[in-house]
Length: 185
Image 1 (tube, rainbow, N blue to C red):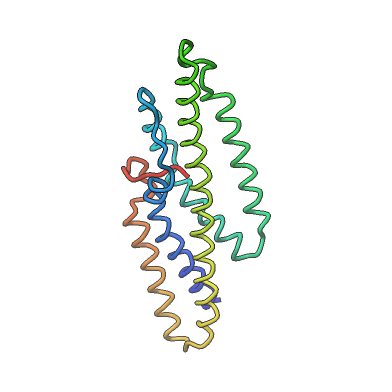
Image 2: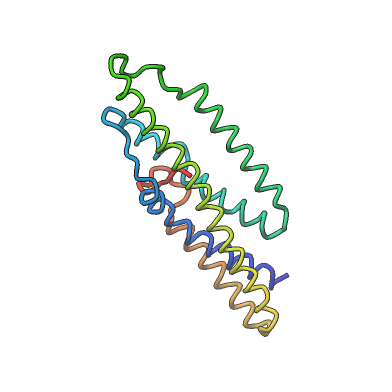
């Protein structure tokens, strides 16, 4: 039991540390900027619990991999797509014509907004899956190696893992939604 707890802790720490770079990853991978006059949408990206959702999503993916129940991750992905679909269909749907006199500009601006939102949604989700997968791989390696450690060393490793996990949680100031480096997954 101690071996598994240590391995899970190590995997979650790696998953959490990798997750700290999600905003930087999204900023570099989704380079489409909102068109002029759509600056309010940038503020929307920072709100809505995106950072907390990203953390919880990475933990869910890690747990799904750890217990070998991939349908948990698949169910979450189906729910997430349905929720996003409903959100964009009924709440934040863009007007039919933003620029009635300039069809090209209308299409260009809608395309930019759609590309940015979709890019951040897809890239953020894939990044969370990647973080969880790497954490799961590290956790699996630790689990296999931990069988070779004496129990007193394993207790030290387990305690250290818990302390590091707590430090990461405090360092990230989660669930502080006012944090400026919050990223929407």
